[in-house]
Image 1 (spheres, chains in turn yellow, orange):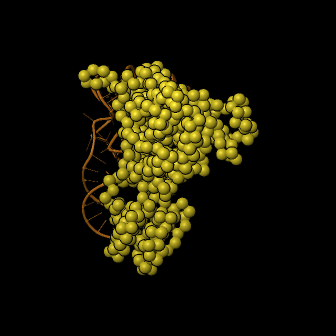
Image 2 (cartoon, chains in turn green, cyan; image 1 turned 135 degrees about the vertical axis):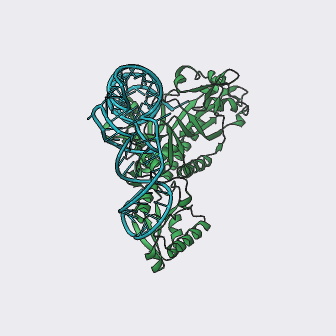
Image 3 (cartoon, rainbow, N blue to C red; image 1 turned 90 degrees about the vertical axis):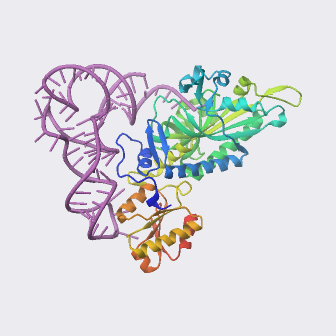
Length: 417
RNA sequence: CGGGGAAUGGUGUAACGGCUAACAUGCCCGCUUUGGGAGCGGGUGAUUCCGGGUUCGAAUCCCGGUUCCCCGACCA
């Protein structure tokens, strides 16, 4: 894309009331727009990154047998009354609204109930399970306090997967497969090194659950990490009893602030029981389906990455989630440079390389400064100097490695490497 | 929800109760410039968060409200 046509622009300054590094950088770079507290819109650059994260998650969910669906956002209270989560424990998390003809609806904040309800139409026999359904959907949560930029918002896209198995044994196999898939997701988006499978409390579902926590200063959780075993436990379950169960010693653990990037739960029969999701087993007996739920917030993932790679002068995003493969920068506004840069742009684009082409007539300093903030990890620079030599300059922003390339094809090889 | 802070052109700030609300940046026009946010000239842009009150006079003081940020509590 030619940057002269990009709808957003990089800003020098950030609104003073935005304290979180992730939001400061993403707003300056034109990735997101803040609409109100805890509510952000995604702009062209930000949506490209978000969609790359979603694509990675989708590939990994598909690889373990997940089937993508899209459920209803508006929620029928009757379905939730069956599990006791319309009022009661979950009461305050709801955004509620009224039907014009009377009657109340809610905006979905998770989907155990509606997916269990619909699964009843497709499950009769033990032959109908297991299966695994997932979706990417906007969730609405009436958080008492939104905070930390896009790390904790009231409206956010979530990948939620629900597993439907015959029994605990079958469930455990999938649960572990999903945990491994999650680790692959975190690796691919560039936070693998700092992300730990973390033993945590099970919330409303069970005694314990598995979280995935990434060590970042902005994190709102505290975890205790065993680097050798690559596991951790949440402060909320940091007790002698749990330590003994995990065979860990206090002195082997390091304390770190961390952000939860994923959470997987064994639901068991809590929802299948409540909503009547039963199957007939081999002996003719009706048995509740054994369920699990598994969540990742793609936008939060982006926020965590930015917290890790950002500074007040810019960021270098991992190639896997950067909005473009290459930032092509034309310096000066001579016809020679413009023609050479246009040519590079065309050749790369024809080869399906995603290029953001800074073709604007502004100073070199501005282009570099803005490029630092936009965060694309690779630069190709065309200038009078490179034209005179008949070459193109390449820079890997993460390592600061620079080289002069002979052809566009060489640049392409770097871009896809 | 408890505690703390804040609200003035798009953005960042200034202004003793008193002149046409100032400066920087952004944006537009012209010239110049082009390897790290360059320079000069001209221009554009504000119901000072909202509603009351005090006063000859309010961005400024008082009362009420709203929104935003931070800490805590909370958090599938």
